Length: 310
Image 1 (cartoon, one colour):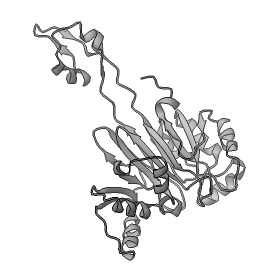
Image 2: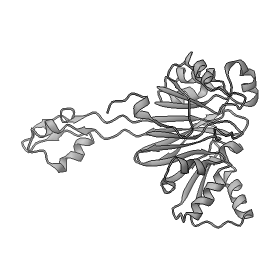
Image 3: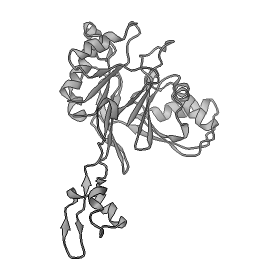
Image 4: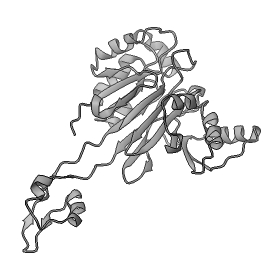
């Protein structure tokens, strides 16, 4: 699982940072998370393959999280896209995009499938044989969701040094062994699966908590997540302003991370009033030491920051 930061600042773009957008790559799936202004340019800079992106997740309909979407949709069309694009977001996102397409008399070479969200409870919105994605209900000024990405448990790994000691085990048996089944010889001897295989590689998880005020209700949803991104628009001394505007402080983000027992915390969505971002990390580390700052086009490899040996 790898996360590329395309943009991380709050509402107004600056010369050094773009509004929120991220690209998550896991198990050969490419998921775009939010789409602020300039996202398609950032994807180009990141050398991302546009054709690999089939699912876009929009947390809420504030401009710094969605204004780049119509441009990206148009670029997909100009690139000759044929595959359908699936867009997950709050109720109203279909009207927003289709109105822009209609008024600009744009014609698509591919279809848009809108999955509009209305529930205030966490729900499963995507599942295939390798990945599950849940909503994380958040508390902002308008209806907002975060998203929890979870890899499904991988297959067990073959211990070839041991397997080679049993000539009767054929290649055709390998898949059953990976699925956890014991091997039964022609004579009826049972060789336990745990003696023939190794545990599966780690299955990663990522929780994306976009704009939200401090809300402990997210803790049980994201419990034990490998990496949590949590907005931290303000420092702790502006907690009252954070509450008033529906945002969080770095201390509050760290408190969520600590109580949810996540392994890593990435901060983001900083107010433009701050020029030095290291103060956010310093403040959060007083509560949750394993805190990271985002960087434009930086890719976080979960295997590395989680110290997982595979």
